Length: 337
Ligand code: HEC
Ligand code: HEC
Image 1 (cartoon, rainbow, N blue to C red):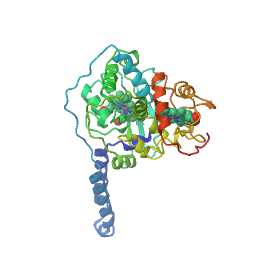
Image 2: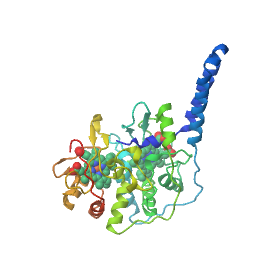
Image 3: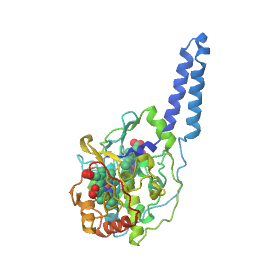
Image 4: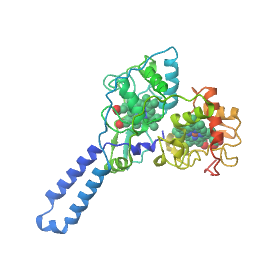
């Protein structure tokens, strides 16, 4: 998977502790006559610690809401489609055939190693078992976990109430892909550099409620580009992602972002603005559906990490197409396309 947006992820309490430990070690190991000479090191250490302390917050407010997801005749199937379309890219593990989680490949080694969570009903290793429905909703809307950590990966500030509801119904279901399984892909670990970088760039979004899903095709298309996260991969870089106002993201949908496919092969995301020379301006709606659902562009087979959105309806693919026609065409030649 891609997902450099973990760079917005934060576990700062640990990095602060590390800084305190480092300053302690420094203080205790330098003889007093050398103290004067090295005073500037202490000064810098303290200043850095202070800057980080001021610019980062380690724990954010959690929710006390008592919301409970409600089931309906279509909730399970619709929720399943959503989870396979939106969450599976990171959480569905092919070897186990379940949502046991994966290593996230695009994190530079210098920042650490990140694994997505096990979403099965495992009491010991499943992440959702301890979550209330309200806490899942809060995590998706704000990025804040049930114990107050900021996890930017799932941040979907504009996701409609009905979609969140159905996602929760599916996550609570007895679908075989969610059956209790204690396997995990690994335990997330950040280096100090990773923590500081993420800590200083991370920001949760304030909680909003009562969001409805648009029905007008163009507005629905924008909603899908936002919530499926097309723009995460198809814009300039992960650092540029604007989760709250997607179309304000730098290089919005004009491609160029280099992602890692299987075996670490680099694949550059396409320009999907309607530019005729460098974008998808010549696609017919049929060709577009095929690209999205089967991974076949008119001129070539598409490579992962471009997902195959097999659970997207034709109506949804057409809405995305209609919306993309309204995005200003941008001439931006993408390497290898
Ligand atoms: C871009 C990749 C990505 C996507 C997409 C994604 N997740 Fe995650 N998710 C992660 C990672 C990585 C973690 C674990 C972070 C860690 O180890 O601290 C995680 C953790 C979680 C957790 C556990 C949080 C905790 O407190 O530890 C839940 C619940 C979760 N995800 C649900 C979802 C749902 C539901 C969706 C779809 C709507 C989703 N995720 C989409 C990457 C992703
Ligand atoms: C995880 C990253 C990722 C996500 C999410 C993603 N894409 Fe892609 N997409 C890619 C990559 C990488 C390519 C280039 C693949 C190649 O060249 O083989 C691509 C190619 C495409 C193409 C082919 C364009 C061409 O070059 O002719 C279209 C169309 C497309 N994506 C649309 C979408 C839409 C619409 C969404 C959301 C519903 C989406 N993508 C979500 C990574 C992604």
